[in-house]
Image (cartoon, rainbow, N blue to C red; front, side, top):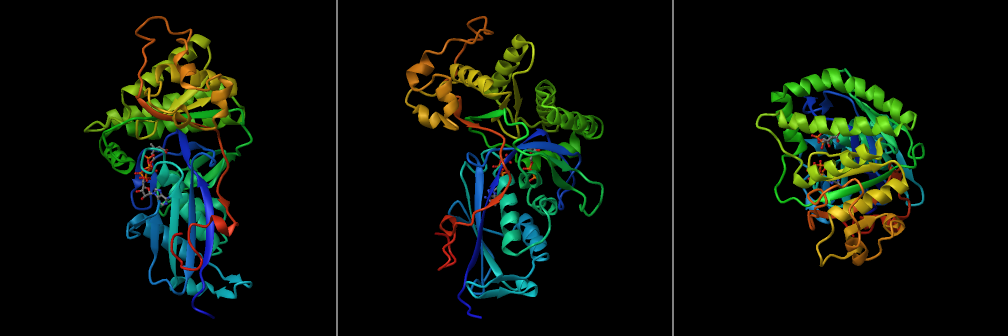
Length: 418
Ligand SMILES: Nc1ncnc2c1ncn2[C@@H]1O[C@H](COP(=O)(O)OP(=O)(O)OP(=O)(O)O)[C@@H](O)[C@H]1O
Ligand SMILES: C[C@@](O)(CCOP(=O)(O)OP(=O)(O)O)CC(=O)O
């Protein structure tokens, strides 16, 4: 067999946002959680990772490039994912290219990995979730691993816990499992992305200067010091998981929103209950919560759910497009862009919602009236520049293979990033 061939596989994988949060591990190395969690997968059109994995007998070592820069693969999390996938590799044959790799060859062959996030990395938008899910999915395809997506999710879990939920579209549950070896701690799809396709998701990327505590460190400190975390994991979450599954199955937005908001707030309460306390939300996050709470109360039933991960960004889930339009009007009223900002780069993703809301240029933003539930000047205050930008999106599908070789991030001639 010629030694100069390069075989590539490219995949695209979404990110996800938890509506019942994972916070706390019972095993740090295997990444086993103290409670189950539920998430919604976000549309990969707006937020996704693309990863190309390549193999060649000419490669001297495993290498990886993230967003164009070479990064080290020596970390335990990358090594665990690579080892688990390699041990399950099968025979691969590409007759057209005259390539034949036998199962046993994979232990000796090295891979090159190039990955690109179409959104900011490490900005609290769960890049590690989409990233590790995509890495595991693409490697499994390249190496002809026969295991189903749930089994692959248990491998992605060892890269980053929340990554296991990015192997599926729609609503996804990460079952915590009981086994010490983690074999029963994996994700399952609850419903696909078409099940509840009225939902619209608006993410407010909140400007923040300070560097937050990473999720990994934060949850370790919470496990060590928070009594509320223990109570939450043992008593509260198991009941919420059952209720949340019911709400999703029955399109019960009122219960869905109530559970989502309560669980986000409890997760942040656990962070406050940690010693020393961890603050992930900032004043802008709190103002967004107040705005949604006030509106929901005035309507008499929830219109929008909010949830916040380990950072100040708000993920807002509206019951339908009309509500999303009204939400965007409220958000732009309170959080207009700085005067010199282009509206086109201030609201990104599915911009059609902006159009439907009758907002086409900055003067339409300036003309927005205070929402009816706002009763006084204090409540009607504006905070220009406190939000960096908004992303309009919706629930989306799971990982896909990109068979068009022109979309690969690695050049099959050189084996290096294009
Ligand atoms: N496309 C990718 N492929 C592989 N690994 C990635 C990819 N993108 C991000 N990562 C890994 O995830 C790390 C960033 O994770 P981190 O948890 O700090 O940020 P985040 O996931 O963007 O935000 P958060 O977890 O707060 O939502 C990167 O340093 C890198 O190790
Ligand atoms: C607040 C969260 O987003 C925490 C996610 O934590 P990570 O999955 O990033 O942590 P590690 O497993 O240590 O990599 C809640 C969630 O996604 O469920």
